[in-house]
Amino acid sequence: MRRSRAYAILGAVLIVVIVGLTYRSIYPVGGVRLAVSTPIGENGELHYRIWTVAPNGSLILLTSGTAHTYITLSSSVVRRVQSTARRLNSSSGILFVDTWVKRGDEVYSMPVQSFEIKDNERWFVPKKVRISLFNPLKVEKGSALEWRTLDRTLLHDVKVPVMIVQKNSNVSLVVNLAINSYSNYVGPKVTVVYANESARNVSDVKINVLNSAFTGTYHIGMGAEMKKGPHWVAEGVYMNLLVIKQEEYVCKGTVCQPDGLLRYLVIPLGMRYTGSNPMIVNVWREEGSGNWWKSTRYPPRGITLTPALGVFVGDLRNPTMLYDIYRKPWSSDNMTMYAVGVATPAGYELRNKLNWLPGWFSSIPVVLGNSIAGSMYELQETNETAKVYGTETAFKIRVKTSPTNGSTVTTMPFGYYFYVVPVKP
Image (tube, rainbow, N blue to C red; front, top):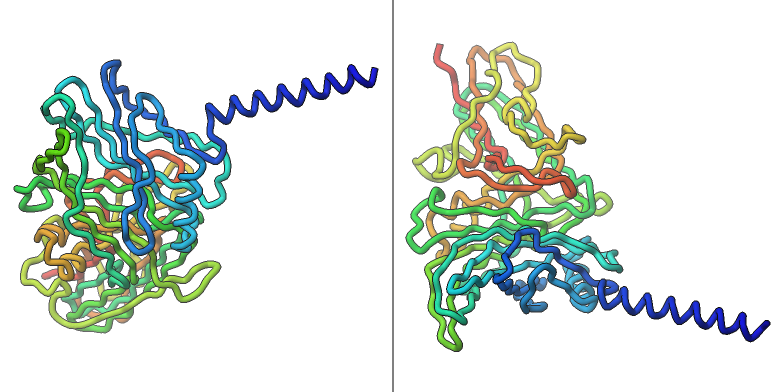
């Protein structure tokens, strides 16, 4: 009786072990399986390269290969990404996925995708990679594509403007802005710009906004009191930004030729904080006379003006809320105050620092924010009536509406840039 019971226990243990080994061979424990959501066809061949970014700005190739329906990452790759995230003091790590599809003599290049791996993820995690056909090329059979880095610079403590008020009026104002993260896994986004060598302005480029390169709970609080008379106030955050310029090459064996497609990546790798739990972001402030853009041309290319819902009149005391100025579908169905972000004028600062960036890069944003709220109200009564404009990007950007619920294509505020001008009677 004891022997039969022992055999039964041993048999049960063997079954558990066999099932466990089978499960591990199909679903790697601690690994990630990426589902390719775009059919590539029976004769299609998917090639991929998966990489991440180190704290010093170097690019780390994690794995590469071919696939058809799934891309499976081992647990060692996941642990490596998590280790890199900890060195960035980030709540999650980011992986970039470069893919292309071969179909006969054609090669289809794909826009780079990204996804995050949380620091506490330990088991199999299914994730979808939405791959869309992009930039089809006719090439010789047996050719492959690769991205080569032409320039790469890691900039520390870049002053990224978030709120700017340009006032050419005697109306005195108080402006407040607050940005909070609802989650430990929401942070500044990665901006990717595709352009041909012939691109001359932002109408010639395509912009994608990817996941966060570093994440964490944060709070950004800004406020400006503006007295009578024309002047401007700018406030923003300090960010570490990795800027990369790459060119696509078609390779046949050891011979490679550029195909004329360029991409620029702006990857945030940290902000400067003044506290923790919640992490209070360090804010800088500048003010002066004249034009904040230091240029006679206003608005800059790629920027449009949006009239506010109302105007400021001498005896007006009710504050104008940000959502009155920007009437955009930025809210998810279940969280009406959830905004997908603000397109900060980071490109304006980067173009002044890196001479290898094209002139139109001044209009390129880095998307920042999660829950955004603020107001503007008159401080002191005047006899002057002023009209307020908000500015927004002229190009449309696809961004997530929440960490878990879908995405939307929309124009975005180009920083919370308010332009206050007198109204002629």
